[in-house]
Structures are given as structure tokens and as C-alpha cells.
Image (cartoon, rainbow, N blue to C red; front, side, top):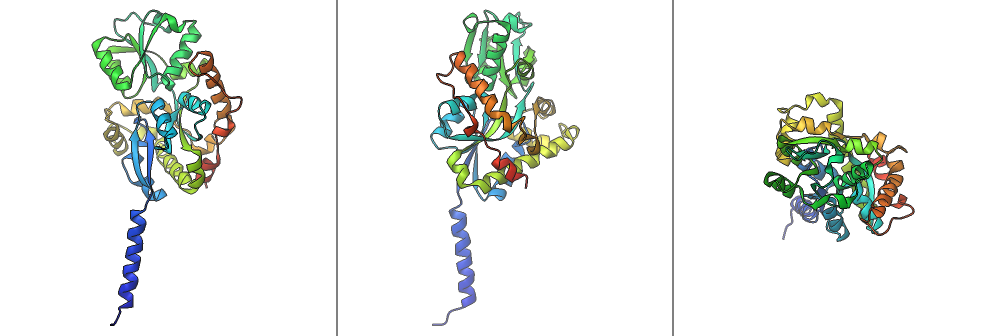
Length: 329
């Protein structure tokens, strides 16, 4: 019997490629569905190409859901708000903050229903406030109440997911809410913005969304995680290079709107409510270098407020600059 060595070799190569494709690791990446530049990655195969992963993007309504998914091992890489991050670290979840997704400004705000009689934070006393409990929005609300000297017992805080807040708003079940986009833009049609998270940050209650990775997974896939951050940096840099070009009819905004369900007309304004930091800025002492102290301050506040039982003495083990630094090379 004669054998065609060239055919055999080609067959072996094809078999190897097929095997590699079949065995490609599927990674679930969690996100909040915010209308931000990273949604361009959700709606493309850029991360797959950069990392070699088969990627499943999973949208979460709140940080508490992300914590549960990461604690179970189901999700290994995700966006997580600063308040839930401090909660997860305090509970011993093995994760690390590796980059900032965004710094939250007016993209999360206190909105009062028209006719509620709420004109300032002080007017919240005796009112019903819907908020995703355990979220950055909840942390900002608690900070605002403390700043105004209003006890939690003096308001009715209703734990609601974003879609529940939208429904409750239309039904008149709540007087106010602290919520993020795109629900914020929708309810502002019949509401008034009182203050945003940028104001509570001035009062000592900063909030952000960070990229976190399961510690063991990150250590085993350092190259791929750095490649992921490089893609996030790429789309953020595209926006930062010329924000004015991201108009309602620009390809980028149309793609973001399609991915999130947001109104393209509102997306440019929504983007202004976030601050996107270049990695070169993130690795500084002010940001990732100071994140452990920010987490500590957040955790101490949550403990004092009775939201968590314990805060740690040191949160530095839950932050690393290594992936961001590798992504910059």
C-alpha cells in the first residue's frame, strides 16, 4: 500500500487545528451592560482573537450577583463596583482588582419623581427610595444620607433591581431612586436629578467599576488577562482621543446602543457621566496604588452602617498592577 505523505501531513495539521479549536477554553466575562466603550468588545470577536478564549459575555444586574458567580467559580473575570468589591474582599472571595473599568460620576445619580416634593437630599426623610442594595448606587445613597445627617430609619430603602426600579417608578411605588444608566435616562423623563455620584465622591464616598479576576485563574492565565486589558484600553483610548466624534449616528455609538438597548441619542451624554482612565494613569499611586486604602475606607463605612460584619486591616492582597503593566508593553 502506498501512502501520500503530503496528504497525511495535511491531515494531521487539520486534525491538530480542529482539536485545538474544540478544546479552546470558554471563559465567562461578567459586565453590567453600561453603555460604555467596552461594549464594542461585547459586540465583536476582538477579545477572542486577542486571548484565544471562547468568550461568553454575561450581563449582571448588580455586584452582589457578580460576587455570587465568582465565589462559585462560574465567572472568573468581571466588572465589579467598588462597594461590592469591598464586600467580596471582606468576605474572603479570592479575587483581585486589576484595572478600572470606569470612575462613576453623574452616570449614577439620585433621581426624584416629579411631584414627590424632593428638591434636595434633605427632603428624602420619610420617602421611599428604590436602589439595588449592596451596589455602588446604594453606597452613594448611604453616604449622602450620612452627609445630611439622615438616619436610615428615617427613610424607606427598597431593595430593587434596575428593571424593578423602572417598573416601580411608572407605578408610583417609589418616590426616588439612586440608579445608573440606561434606567436613569428613562426615568428622568418624569423625574429630576438631585445629585450624582460625583458629588458624593466630594463628600468622601468615591465609587467606581473595576475589572476583577479570580486570583488563581489570573495567575494561571496572566498573558491572556493582560491581552484582555489591552483590548479594553484600545476601545477606551478610541473614545478618549475624540469624544466629540462619538455622536448618535457614529458607528461606535450605534454599536453600543445596539449592544445595550440604550437610545443612541442618549449614549453620548451617558458617556460623559463616566471617567475612563488610561492604564498609564491607573497604575499610579493615586489609582490602583491607592485602591487598597479606598477599599478599606469603603469597608469600614459599610461595617459602621451595619451592612457587613467585618472589615479587614489590609486590602492590598486584593489589588495588583501586574496585569495592567503587562498590557502596557
